[in-house]
Image 1 (tube, protein in one colour):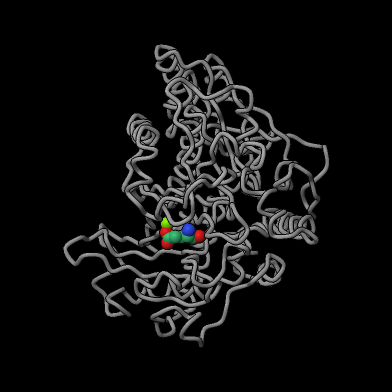
Image 2 (tube, rainbow, N blue to C red; image 1 turned 30 degrees about the vertical axis):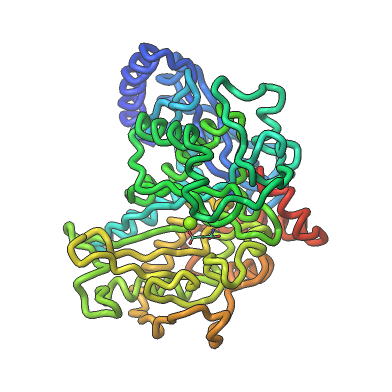
Length: 478
Ligand code: GLU
Ligand code: MG
């Protein structure tokens, strides 16, 4: 890393710190997401931000091989207690946190002590792949959806994780009781309806606080609505560049967590909350742009996409069995990925088909930004930086190969038949991942091996667990 760049960051950080101090912000949370999909943090006092921007803050590389339960594995290149990294905040993303008075947030890039990029830094991987797309003249625009289940106060012990963090604090002033159908609550009446207005009314103050927190943080929300499962809600935000989309996925989730806790509620972001129920997705929307033109439309490929967009999507679809180890990285994800759940269990694409893993959306002809593709198999355990980078790598490999899409699939393959399933277990996905030359090259050996090691270890961790045990051990961890 260039010294001049560090000096510049330091002087920018000094100005930002003065602004934060004037707003009574005393601490800055610096986050990155590990290979298991958990957001980890080091925080610094606001007064230390300028020093941190210049010199970074220390953190062990061992977090690259942490599992969902905070146990450790080892990988070929990373593991053990030795070594240290420096975390450098991206000040361009510095955000005052509306649901955590006194706190701001920024994502970090990870470097070694000498200023060289850490080869397993997931955020820099996402940036490298974005730069690679730029070499093709392609600017991807991406956005993650966020689905979560609101847990009532009585469900804290059952879910663990964020609930236990709030234990003993009691509901904040103006707290809202959990919805009657929250997971773990005694069911006195049938749950209120999926997508029902009743759900919005039940948590009206909470959802209003969420919207105002996002507005204060200048996060553009597109939609907020109750989802299918009991207590489940969804937020989608405006698309941005791939690294920005991954940063937003982190910020959106932590904002939801923060607002929920202030209402005495906790949250489940795991891929499955109840082992047999509909799970949480983190669907990834993407479109490809060149010179202000959306390559997902006005072309002579299927459903009006350009041939270049077709080749990109064909690359993603072709690599999807291997990509599953990135976008559905926990054994819990394979409890979610079942037919007829809109989670994309089948290895196919389709126009507006919610059962296809890859759903193509033409949007309104009048809306240039409307056409996009949605990868439905992504779940909230995925590291969003690994997800965006790996999807770009697979798409560009499709362009290199001049790939074309198979015919689109209409209807639910569970009913119509004829389509193969995507991997039905993490172990099966890992087998495809380990055989993927595309992902190995793109991620680079140290990151690829660390990801594979974490997948192998999580598969082993839950090898003898029942679906109920997997759901209970993971739903509150992300
Ligand atoms: N909750 C579903 C999933 O597991 C997605 C529902 C939807 O299409 O929004 O992915
Ligand atoms: Mg949804």
